[in-house]
Amino acid sequence: MKKLKSIHIKLAMITVLFIWTIASLVIVFKNIVGDFTIRLVVGNIFLLAIVYLYLLIDSILKLIKLDSKSIKDRGFKFIVFFILLVILNFILYYFTKAKGLGLSTSIPVSIILSLGISLFDLSFITKIKEDDKDE
Image (cartoon, rainbow, N blue to C red; front, side, top):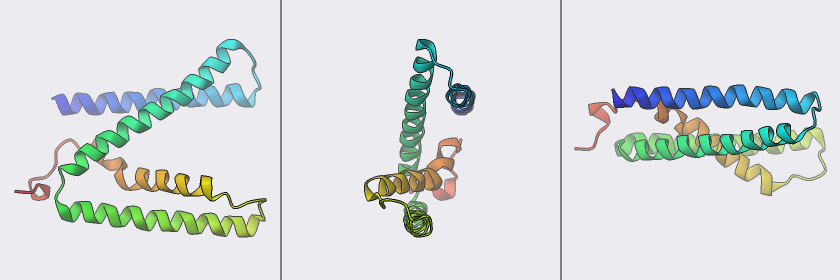
């Protein structure tokens, strides 16, 4: 029961984040200026960071409980997605003739997206299978 409540809380957090992001996008694109709107957009950025960190920490804690084969598979998946995203960034840079490649922004973005892709589903697993546990 506790695990189902945890999943409902996570889904509620993501739903609130989604609605808040839509409201922030409307504010930005309609160019609505005001003290409240600035606080709303900044609050959305903080909520995004908090939700991402919460889901990342939860996923890492569940990753520790998995067996070594599952950890190796997820590590391989992370490395493959990281390399693919970096290569995609280089290809997009080549075709768009951008001013600078910006490795200081492309590498962290690739790492964050790869972590999200390879670990996101762990946050919503309610029970680790008996086959996946180390005994």
